[in-house]
Length: 224
Image (cartoon, rainbow, N blue to C red; front, side, top):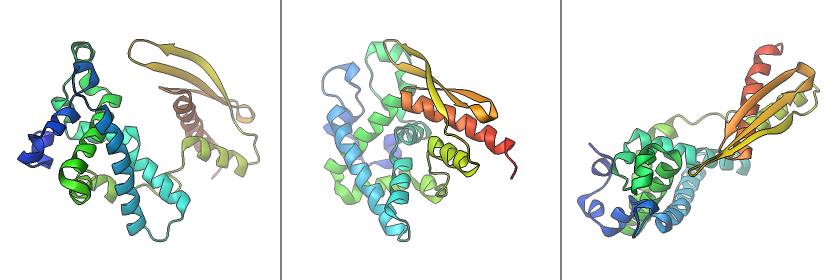
């Protein structure tokens, strides 16, 4: 069963907007960019409302972290892959040839466009029902508050707890081609002679990746 067959009525699946939501700009004509913009906002609202209703004891900071965990691009791409959304995306020849059906950025943007389409076709209530089904496993297995902190924050707090200077981040390399950019960053903690390298599509994500590696090594090194 395909993505659209599992989640949507025939009316939604046959709509002009739904077709546009599944069409990447590389294919030409009407595409999903505007719907992606709308879907991003709708997703944020529905996730925020769900967390507000179901976690009455959490403060604003933790609610924001939980929302960021659920509506981040990596999560959307993961959900899209899990439900085989890539099989239904319409791509131009170039993107098709380079494996665009499996590219996280394209998958995440397309899923946001689908969410925008749902809002326009079946309203907020129907879109919420769709998202609760889509996110069922993720909502039932939310990480704890500490796990929701980003790697740089967790590393900083760990170092402060043992009276150690904050890590240093150094950009080692920056690569780019027609489809993406890649940053390579080193995270260094001099006191423990630890240096780890991380990569990412942005400098910030590369820093987070390197911080995660350093954090894991420190946790295994420091006395409990």
